[in-house]
Image (cartoon, rainbow, N blue to C red):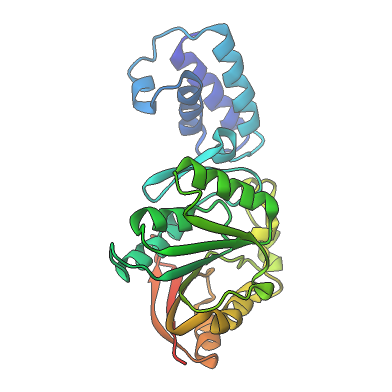
Length: 281
């Protein structure tokens, strides 16, 4: 079969399963199998594909038709300026989370040697991206999942930062290393009702421990705000991601706990997504 025929085969299969990105996904999977860029693939669609590569394509397209995310199929995802290994033990990095990295960089310079803690580090994409841009920062990533930390450590090794980032398997409740200048986090923030309404590709494949946050979706955020009061220095900065329709309640929680709200950043859909706040005492 030729390239365009294989893409059509995959597209039709995915379309029959109501996968919206059916053509793009088929192209990306064939490009992956051939170890080519999508652009290179699309300029050589008349080329014949050998039997072994065709079989590999079919195996991957069959995984995608079951709604398995492309990132898990490929075992990697681009985030900020780098590529990261991902597994089903960690959330797939998303563009809106890059706002956290961007805001830390705005508040620091290349010679910053302050202390930063990443709570619920997952794949390590946030802390690794920051460390690559601010090499003198002292950084620590914590996560309650040992499996997630294995992925983070793998990514740190891949980016030659294994000995420059401290990873600890611990819940923030039990963490007692104080006096941080920055705490960053992409915590779970989806309430129990909305968990049931998530897309199949998220609900069936991504780790629910990194998504579920109780009846109001604020269970983990409340804990993060309270614990950060102890972990941050005076005038230390807390930067974290929130869910849709949570801005008002999060503002109330922060003010109640004597944080100054510097700003709330919106994502590409104009949804309030990342809160930057300062501990005032």
